[in-house]
Image: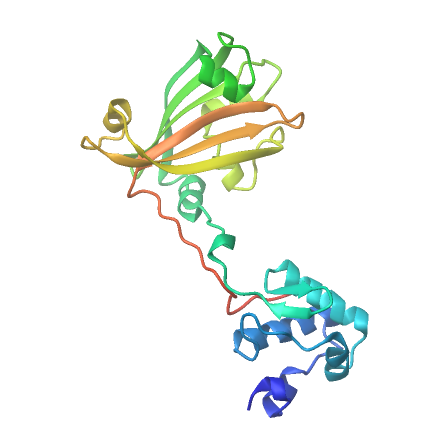
Length: 262
């Protein structure tokens, strides 16, 4: 029987355990989410009103509001003032892609090693100066390195660092990649935020040779720029790899399980 019509299946879903450690509002949110996953409420359909949920679950209006807010923060529902709460429709434009393959590579020291190819001071050309917000011709620290996976070239990195002896990030950068600490959740305390740009690219002669690919070769480029707490750029560069090395995957819609907690 349709859960929305209050049949036996619906009554079973309405059970809340008031002795559980999980807050009542979180249990209510999970109950509604499970009904949405089961198809009781389809994308675009309206959920029961606050008054109806209060009656069905024997909870306070505040509990209902907190449950709806939780579902809204999870991207499951939308609340329209004066109209009610609706199950969010699947939107391709809201998809978020995670660099899981890169994270695994950067996190596994047993398969990933870094070969430092070059470190030197280099005058910033017009493009680099614009990226790092410095004067053209000002010296920056130029780094080239190769990430080896299973002893084979995988990612070629070229980057520039602000030339500031007071920044300990420089020493750390010589040993590891810009992104390794961030992927492991232990990034530099000097970094406030960063921007990443992923795009397809035609690998140049140097990139093709270093990565031991056959020319002409199409690759992927992951450009990065990181900022300090004064909102000033502190490093800029890019990783390039074979087009077969990176694969983006994401899932849109509502996950089957969510384990909502307080």
